[in-house]
Image: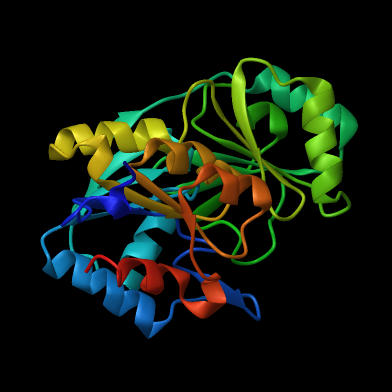
Length: 269
């Protein structure tokens, strides 16, 4: 029986993606509506846990935490490779992988690509500057060889001259064995350790909090949310999500522009 048909069911943990879910982008700046902020406040007031679960690095997570008005808790960053508590920020689990060979293969196909690897808790090491606002934290410029000389938690490959379809086809053609990867809405490829996803990060967080999987509500909009939506007791896709993401969830809410998160949370809190 699906959670919404259980009499009296209420989520004990609400997992929220950030970009395209609680945050929209207008004129290059991130915005969060008062309706979403208030709805999340209702969750906290009811005693349920709110867990930010995102591809963002720790500084990007904390920027979202500030917008949401959360004062402390656990979070999933870097598509599940990093889990941490706040405030203060304390790492709970970090998973790394050797990305050198994969990055080499990708750059043979897109030699002009922007490459970024996460510097946990600080920001990113990059081979060239990314467009403003796309990644958060301190940026340190290095050669690609330096970027992947040691195991990392996450790699971003971005190529403004490629389309989403180009990147999806490239990833499929190369195989990219031994890693997880997600293609974004732009020409953006996220590389993660094999077997690591937002779902694995949330599973750890839920266990720490003593929350059953069946009592988790997860909301997201991107390909990197698919595992999370399938794993949660109730997975809800945003209205503007690709069909593949909508099919992974139990339900679909309104778009981010129409406060889909607030509408879903209002059903339970």
